[in-house]
Image (cartoon, rainbow, N blue to C red; front, side):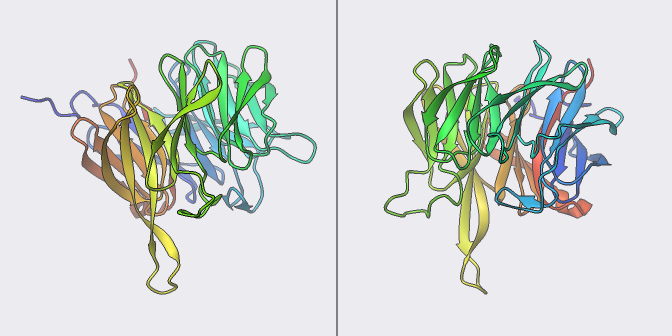
Length: 351
């Protein structure tokens, strides 16, 4: 008899950001039961769980709005104890601003945070000591708006996607320098393979081209060879992709956007999106499942069995069995009075 994908998850927790809440909500990963909510500063975006310090890091990016249309850029990171569900500290990165992407090197005790540029310097990545929770320095990415950031398994190389700049920035994390610019259209989410030989980048970014336009590049995931710092393949998708995530079992997940005409205005509006699943080894598409409107963030359980898809417009989180590609549950964040589901983190129970 096949074991339930929920078996053994008692005590595990899923943390979910509500961008407009502004809150971080916690759910029992075995029963989908709401456990509690922590209020944070506006406007939270992404989450990262540090298993060594057993803390959650949450970026607060804007006063309101989103990239290209915001009411001002914030400077804080909120540090949360996921067991007591309390704010431990608010770390101010000023004069750095608009922190967004988070990548953890737990072996070295380093957290990397992407920040947007200003008139006197380009965007970059702030390096934080996870033990002292203090910045150690910054690495320039030579682009105005690095958004997502990921590191390879060795902790030596980092990749920043850039919405506006037509390249992915590659940085040497040990030397703190920009080492390459890989040509891609303006880009969104990314992930790095378990052996560090490939990076997967969603491009072009939403809004940079009209779908089907003659000059528009094909939508999908660009596969980058880390050794040559070049694009070697394209995994095509029907629509724009925002989040990309690689599971521990080698499945590449993509949150694919879809639109439909508004019956009143006749203009396009977000339709239910897709979770599209590829094999990272072969590039073959394994399947696709309908999820909520505007899938914005992805994560998975440590065993790679479950996927979690946060959808901002429907304000839902969809729990998917990746072996059967069937939906198991839908967490309705809006029912908590917290619209705008965004960042996600899976928190295993204490050892």
